Image (cartoon, rainbow, N blue to C red; front, side, top):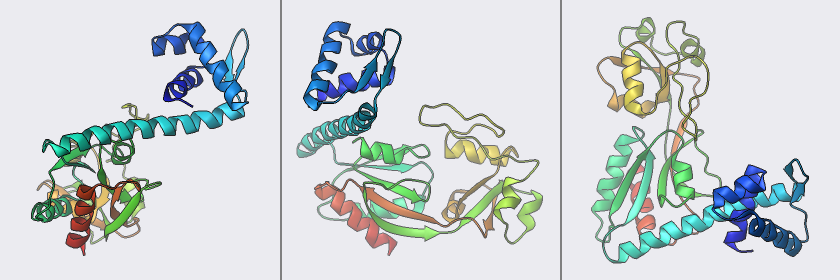
Length: 284
C-alpha cells in the first residue's frame, strides 16, 4: 500500500462522505472513489459500505483505519526526524527534549547541566508543553526524547528509564484552614466547598464541562490557587516552585508519581543515548 492510498482512505473513513473527503484532500471525487476501489480489490476486503444516503466502515475498514493512522503517524515522524538529523550534521540542531511546563524542574536543570558537561554533548532544544502533550510529540516526531510522569502519561510503545518516584501534595491558598494540618487525604481536597479543581484543555484545545476554573499552564494554575479560586494535587517536587501565597500539604493516599525518560525504541541517535545516560546518572 502507498501512503497516498492510506491518506485517501483515512479521509473517507473519518468524513464518511466521499464528497467531503475529496474536498479535504483537494482532489476530485471520481479519482478518490477509484483509488478506494483499487485498495479494496488489492486487500480483497470491503472497507466501506456504500449506499445512496450514507457511507459506513466495515469491521475490516475499522481495522485499516486504526492501522493506517499509526502508519501515517510513523511516516510523518520519520520525515521530521530525518530532516532534524540532516540539520544536525551541519551543526544547526540537535536533540529535542519535551517536558511538561513546570514539571520536574530541578531534575531537568541537573540533566541539562550534566549532559552539557559531556565532551560529545549535542545541542538540546527544549520544548515546554501542556498537560499530557509530551507523549504525542514524541510519537509523531516533534521530539526525540521526553520526560513523562506515571501514572498520568502513557509509555506504551516507548523505551524508558525510571528516574525518580515521589509522593504528592495538595496546593492550597496560603492561610486556608487546611494548611494548618500536617497531612491530608484526597477526599479532603477534592470535596472542598470553597475551592475547585481546575479544568484542563483536551487534545482539541476545548475544556470539559463542569465546575472549576479553566487553566492552561502551570503559571495560570498557581495564580488561580493564590487567588483562592482553585486547589490542586501535584508531585512533591512542585514545592520548589511555589509562591509565598501558595502552600503545600502532603496527601497520604495520593498515588506516587514516577518520572521516566522515554524515547522511541527504534532510535539510534547518539544524542538521545547521551541524554538518557546523563538523566540516569543525575537521578541515581
